[in-house]
Image 1 (spheres, helix red, strand yellow):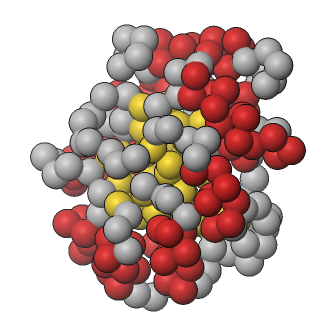
Image 2 (cartoon, one colour; image 1 turned 120 degrees about the vertical axis):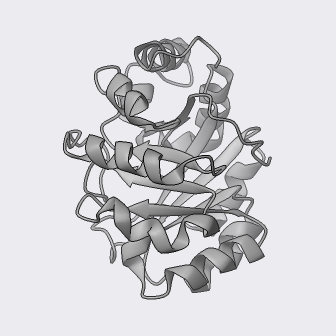
Length: 233
């Protein structure tokens, strides 16, 4: 599924917090409970200190994800894997600015493979670093934790970066995504600063299961309400 651009608030559960033994069913359950996108965190044990999924897993999940599949590559090098993730069905492929020396080439390769191009920034990378490629991206992802593990605490200092990026984006059709520590206590601040895509892992999956998915919906609605968005918007 491709994304038709709009700035409505989107909740993108990170399946890093889901039941790995039943990821297809988890994607279906959380979508049925109101998720807008599905966020897939790909980690290589090199660029970040953890290992998660590869393109084979994304391909296996694609039929279970009826909405946008948002694939976040926390890997280095990136370019050699772009085609595989695009062929696996990723709608967005997000690479880290810090993962290689030729980010312009990487973004062009993502678009050339048929996916939308995302650019992620680690907490220590300033907003101004994206200026040379603002017209080459479809999404900017601000990491509000240091990448590598779920369940970390939100880094308050990143709110100013979100606000600055919102100013830099202007009227470009570029999503501003926040990833890390998003929950009902932080959602309002990041949306007020300009974010429109909220990635949440444990804050969505906490308390629920495939057998009892209702808490997923309750958690999503709590984040959406805290962000100031009407239910389903």
